[in-house]
Picture 1 (cartoon, rainbow, N blue to C red):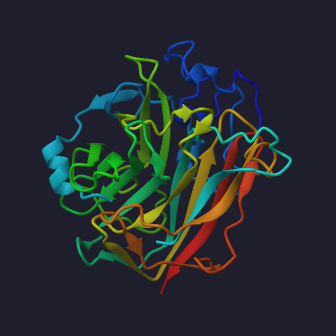
Picture 2: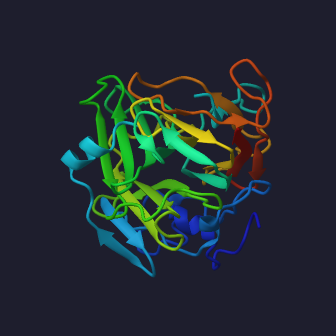
Length: 359
């Protein structure tokens, strides 16, 4: 499944909006110049139901959407509502692209940007979930970039997040964050998602999934828009929600050949403002996937850069440090060398999978 003919639309790539399956995208743009090979979910990494569905990418227009049989525009949250209800969102495994300095890279090339990725949370057992700050069944699912020096010259960051708690609609948000400015003025979110309160709580057998990528803007193909797509089973396993936001600080741009987006990490965590998701009697599988659509170099440490299974142990800002009480079945942390095995599928898709538990 690593390579298929151009005429076939593979499900995972349909979500990431590559030009081979995004007929509405402008020709001659960044997306159009990407590798035309289609991707599979990395072998050895369990794939969520969302990764097996044939769905076109959402429009490359800033806004909020949902997909049932076609993409339909929905109302985004107002800035005031989002600021009130969705606060800014540990030692987490990460996939990091690093420059190889050995003879494999004689020209000292830096990585091109990661072009997309996903996090899937496979709930196989769940007794209870409580966030001591925000209440019972409150949590967030986060898919985060590395920190980077943005087009504004500041230290910036991007988070793709779903924030869920009873008695208010989920907030599916893309956060463009200026860490130099900090809270509150440096945090800018575009939020959408379901219009109603969650019909039920998260439970065993749910497999919520976030996909993130980018495409050229439909109104200005010289710049990119960020896209977040999600299946939230406590609402529906058949509806896909999406938010499209401006790439405010240039995460997806390469500068002098060096990519800014070089890492992904994420999990199920506290709802926001440094809170913790406390689980009991839980067993949760976490899938983390990165895509690099322009090179084979993420595979098997070949080429001028390599994908590595690493730790994300640094809190990127004082306002964001959500955690959980889950513990991996295999020990990994800041002082250990054991990490989830990284699985790469030729070409361009790398992923890892690990099991978290709570007694």
